[in-house]
Each structure stands twice: as structure tokens, then as C-alpha cells.
Length: 168
Image 1 (cartoon, rainbow, N blue to C red):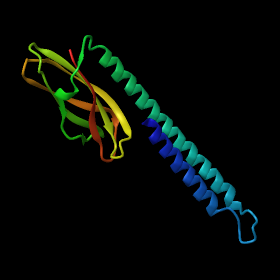
Image 2: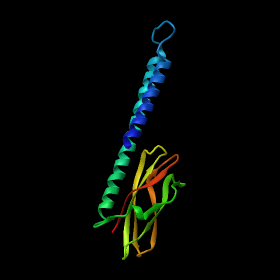
Image 3: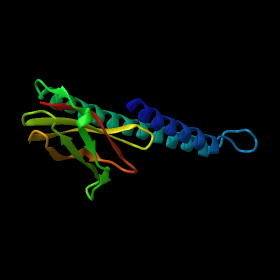
Image 4: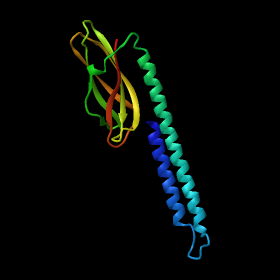
């Protein structure tokens, strides 16, 4: 899904480059105007900046995804428990990070812990961030709560989904 965001940023940069470049291509005689080289330079810089942002976003997401996998791997002997986990609504806090309440119901006959991977997405379903929350020592038949917080600042409308949940 990161490809969608990267392609979107690259497409925006390309559209900007074409628009800016076309705006100063030539004067009425068909001779290139002196502004066109400035426009092309500005378009090139815009495309480079967009590409850099896309790369940084992709790198941050890859890092968060790797960290989530590492945390899930720590849940030795875990069994899938996605159906036993529910999320509240994602909100953006004063620090710009998204948070969501995570509730895990222990349907086992002994105290268990949960590792829950939460994916933060935009309204189009593009993956913005990934985190894992651990809810420890939930009594049998009881529910435990935790809060998943994004690793970085997110903007716009953000949704949260349970990607993976393990009971161990």
C-alpha cells in the first residue's frame, strides 16, 4: 500500500512540473521565453522535494512495519485472536499523533496477554503508520484495554484497523 502513496506523491510532482513548465514555455512567437528555464528549474526542485518526502515517508513506514513484526514475533506461542479485539475511533492528539483505544477480550480459561498490530490508514485505505500495543495479563473471561499510538504525526482523517492480534 505504500506504493499508492508514493505513486500519488510522484504523480502530484509530475503534474506540478508539467503545469509550471507549460506556463512559461514560449512567447507568442514560439521562441522559448527566459522564464521557461526558471519554471523548469522550479518544477525540477518541486519534483525532487516530492520524491524526497515520498522516500522519507516510505522509509518511516518500512521501519515501523519492521518494528511491529519484531514485537509480534516476541509473542511466542501466540494464537490468532483478531476476532477478540475491537478498536475505538482514531483521534489526532495535540502532538499530531493518532491514538485509538484497543480492547481485547480473553476467551481462554487462563490469564493471557495480547499483542495487537494496529494499522493507521487514510480514508482511501493507504497505509500511513503501523504500531503494536501489548495488553498484559487479562483474566479469563475479562477484557483488557490499551492505547495504540502512531509513531509519527499524521494529518487528515485517520482510520485504525486491527491487522493482526495474537493471544499468548
